Image (cartoon, rainbow, N blue to C red; front, side):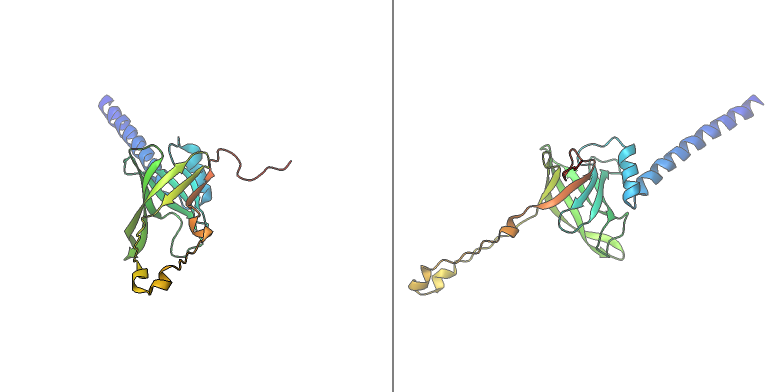
Length: 188
C-alpha cells in the first residue's frame, strides 16, 4: 500500500511540474495583442531593451522580450501593425547584445518563403536611455563618381548640392511601456 502511495505522489509531482512548464511555455508563446503584451511585461522581471516599442514612422507596435531559446538575445514580436502582411504574435526579428552596453545587433526579417520568414537584414541598434528610444543605424553604401572630369572647364566650377533635412532624421523605435517619464504633458 505504501509503495502504491509513493507512486501516486511521484506521479502528482511530475504532473504538477509538467503543467507548470506547459503554462510557462504557453505564456511565452501567447503574445498576440496589446493586453497579452502588457500582462507579460507586468509579470516578468524585464531587463535591457525588454518592453513594448513602436517603430517611429509606421505605427507598428512590437514586444521585445528575452529569447525563449535560452540565449542572451531578445525576440521582436508583432503586437499590432497597419501592414497586412504581418500578423500579431509573429516573431519578425531579434536583437543580440554587443560588447558595448546599449549597442545591439538587430536582425529584421524582410521576406517570406512558404509562409515562413527567411531573409533578414542586419543593422546596429543603439539604446538611448535619456530619450527612451532605440536608434537604428542601417548599413549604408556610398558610391562617388567624379563626373566633373567629363565636363568642359566652365561647368567644373559649378557645384550643385541638395540638402534634405528629413533624410537626416533618425530611424528607430520609441518605448511605449514601461515609460520612464511621460512623453506627453499631463494637464490637470
